[in-house]
Figure (tube, rainbow, N blue to C red):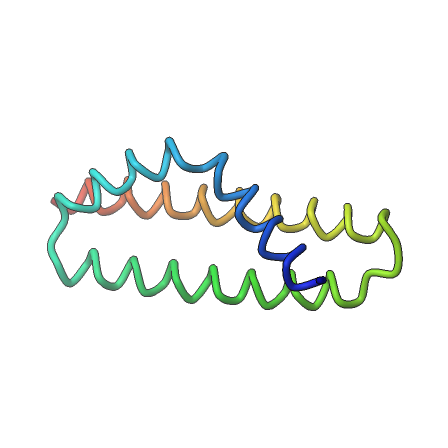
Length: 96
């Protein structure tokens, strides 16, 4: 049950990023393969770590307030990762 809660929270956060993700993917398609692959690998590692942290948070939560704090932390982490990727995309564009 808790795992489903984590999955639902992760997908709810991801849904908001859909539009910007498409724009970023278009830009990534323009960059050299090796650079694109490295960025994708880094992103997957970070997402995996975020999911693991979220699982730990949800498993430790004892009430709704704690679950809401988990959700808030997930949103903040997702936003930070998104901003970091935007910065990397800008740097990659400059190098092209």
